[in-house]
Image (cartoon, rainbow, N blue to C red; front, side, top):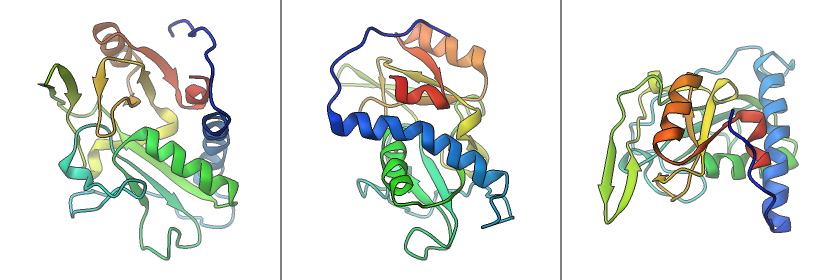
Length: 190
């Protein structure tokens, strides 16, 4: 993995969100391994039916970047038959931190796996964006991925974390696009 960035000033609110990412990983693993709440493991679904991000309300399939989904126990969110869904990993982590603070139990967390798809990079107005992929097969367990952070590529909400299941592919992407590689549990260290 690449070296750590020097410490920078982080707002207290952002620090709380980022600190909760580690708790999310623990909760996600506990849920997937069976906490007694839901014995059936979660499986990713396709986000092709006009689903909108549970944070910003944008239609996920219509925007650039990685998508994500979190399955919770007890028919959450809002009694929905299925996961909470997102148009960026950054928003997924923010949402998860708030739900973790409320005591929600995670059954599984999935993100777009750029190692499993033929992604495109699109240049618009001197900004490079990465394509979105929302078929069920495009998602991987978030805790198993390597994330390119601080790159010059953007997603739906601007700067994002780009997940790869293959470490070599993540490091190649990071080398080509000025990023660094982190594992799930270290996203809060960013």
